[in-house]
Image 1: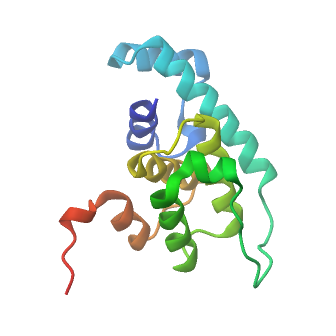
Image 2: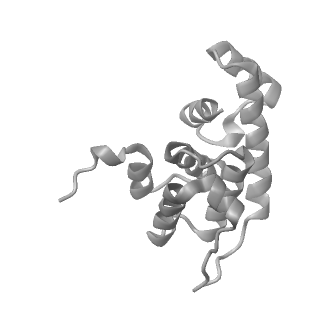
Length: 150
């Protein structure tokens, strides 16, 4: 499923640039994705659209996010740390954070690989028609082993 999501991100600049689901499904199939993988991705994207509608508004200043046991099990410590980092850096507002958590829970397996959570973050930005800033892109596409610490 995540390969399909990355393909969509790379080939369609916004969700509304994608063809209708049936046509998109045919295109993805022609590219070589398996039908089950396509359906999982399209179902996940439908949930993302619904989540985007319900998670709007301004965050409450000074509030703290407490993760439930289920969220901790699905996300894992590394992914939660990454989400907290993005939020504390000011690039992932609380409503978007909630979208990331919701979509991670929709995948339902855990602990998730950090790379999969990064794709979810990228898709949340994509779904809102927002271009991630340079910090987000750097964190999403640079492996920890490749970072140079000065």
